[in-house]
Length: 447
Image (cartoon, rainbow, N blue to C red; front, side):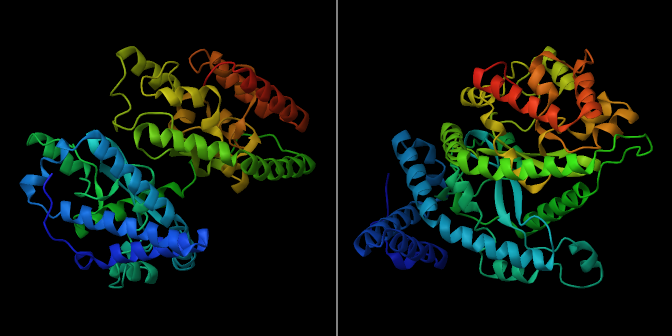
């Protein structure tokens, strides 16, 4: 591979120089050793300089990037991840400040996920800070600025894309390379015979402003829609829980969830790292589910499926497609990765839902949180009202006593969920809790 004969650190842009400086500061304050800090930051500086030189080659030379050896590619990934890990404390501080300031002005999610295509046509979400207000369109119609004050500052100094550090940490990106194409751009590329044979870079061509603006507006519209609770008939009579039961149940949740998060945090981190290293992707997965009173919330899980298709039916046979449409899950799902199969069997993928319990979206025990369409297609109006009269649970009567043996088609799953809803009590919750523990430890049945 030919490099320029001469390259200097002065050709680096301010963001790159800032990154080197931050590596030095963070490593010095963590290690308390100036020589080690200089060595680390110097290594990063050389890495940036070399890669900057590589990425200023002609377009023709860039097109042959796929000819790099696997060892070189894995080495770039590893070094990029190490640098992102060193910079992580600084990023977390920045994220906290942005989160506080943005939510004081316009409450809502701070990270905006932009769908992008990575190496070998793997789909991933490229993260950026939200720069628009949640009421941006209304303000624009009034001739006012749609930006938050924080967003305008971040955009002006190009720190709105700082969350892409997480994409680098997860292995979806590296520091240097061409930008990741959007879905529309990728489809155009495939029509022209181009392949996604490179890993997208942080320091590459910036996405067009009109595309970023359109995608962020779409994201805001989606978030505003999710803020609306599910519309259902509230008239059917539902069970009223004794105040004592509600208090004890919530106290139980507030004790179990933080203690479990603390105890299982090493397991969560190791599992997430294993998932990410297995396919260079984000190890965490979120999906909108319906909670108590029809409120929508984001369910957290560790990802157990492959990421190379947006269409959930892409890998399924006609029989599997029918099963998925009917049960909203598959017994032998072809999208599940080898490590995903293990974490499903051991229920490790469910551990991040301890955060949902702590936030009050869920309880330790309750009916399973479902999708909007899943509820409407399998429950009557009266059952829906009763089902949504209590918080969904990490585990429940169906998981503890039937697991995969009860289906929507047979009606057994609905019967078991409704049995819990109609008979819920603290004693039943305790029985379900220990029954689930025994099933998980014994490895009985995967979800």
